[in-house]
Length: 333
Image 1 (tube, rainbow, N blue to C red):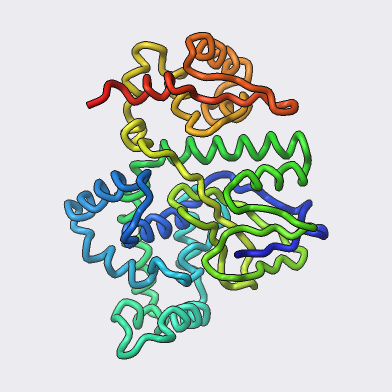
Image 2 (image 1 turned 90 degrees about the vertical axis):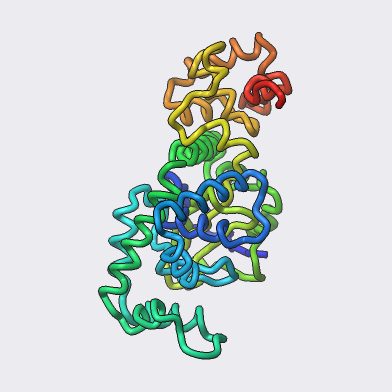
């Protein structure tokens, strides 16, 4: 369980990242490749990426990356320096500027219990070898191009929808409303100003008056994650939890769903987003259209029985119906 004290000015300083962070997504996707049990939503992605890495001749290099970024309770903070940096180049520039003292400290912590010599790649990084750090950045870039970049349309759509929900909550209820919107996620709750979330270990995230940045993680599964070093700017990466079938429906973001020929591309994409209930404003933000246009599309889909709309307070929430899901999924095999 993670505990975050938000009883003071920290609540008013909450920040929602602009979108998913490039290097966080790279690290989290590496974890998924290593996990023995992966959520059904990501099983097709993992099969596809493993084959693509083999074809690209990257399998050996990625195994070295996994030595630095294991799917464990601890992996080095310097691998994820951003707070919602959408640009991979920005993140890699930050990684390349990591001080040697910090590299040594974090890699020592990673291998504190290891017996025997360190892997060569780790040893060279711990020695402050600038060429080794440059090679790490190059491998990360090549890995990202195979494992993350082809899936950016789906990733960005999910992150944009999440940000729209948070923005609407903040506009309606201020900082309290923003925080309440996160309490809809499993295991998140706030009691007497203390936010509690699931976490791999028992820990308190110390803000000490600093801004906490909430970052959506497409490849984040299970629990939220935070940087281990409390001296670094605090971030909390939370799962976006895409629904099973996202890969088949998006096909790398390059093709529209077959049903688009029947109901139109915009309405098909709107229907795809409703893996979970969303507001009109949230749909508009994710689809980059005006709220009035999103509302008109929703009305047409509602009249066709493909979604339902219910009012929750001053928000209209749209839900995809079984008929809508069946239409997206296409004929049964």
